[in-house]
Image 1: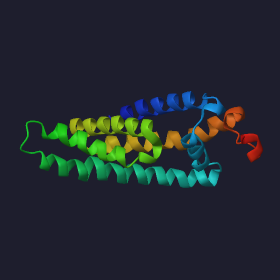
Image 2 (image 1 turned 180 degrees about the vertical axis):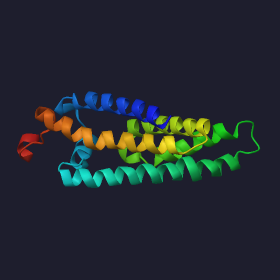
Image 3 (image 1 turned 90 degrees about the vertical axis):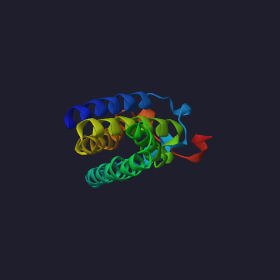
Image 4 (image 1 turned 60 degrees about the vertical axis):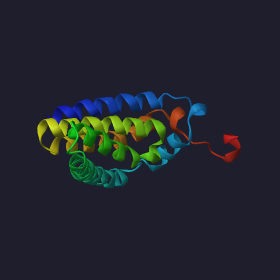
Length: 165
């Protein structure tokens, strides 16, 4: 289950990155440029990023699909659908932790959080969401810089401030 979830999310992430890379330079916003600057550019940065992705996937899933989910499940225990309310609430918190990704990123993160919560409930195990989260982060951090380097017309920053104006 973990491998299937990871494969589906990674393919989705790959497709989304390819679509984003096709956005003309004059239509890119601050978030795109910021993200491009923080992506790993060297093999050393990529190695460190792999460790970061593993840490983020593990810790965020334990926090949001483990602890926060359990807190809200207990808080809504008297309701007709405590698992549903726990899924929605913990996914909303997960999305809020990703505000730096902008409105679209928050919405996407909330949907992915709901998917991770559903898989956690269905499987009774937190491992599939952990593996899926790590996979998505790895695709984003390792593939995006390569994609942008392969298309320098899409990813090259202006040589000077004058060119930007």
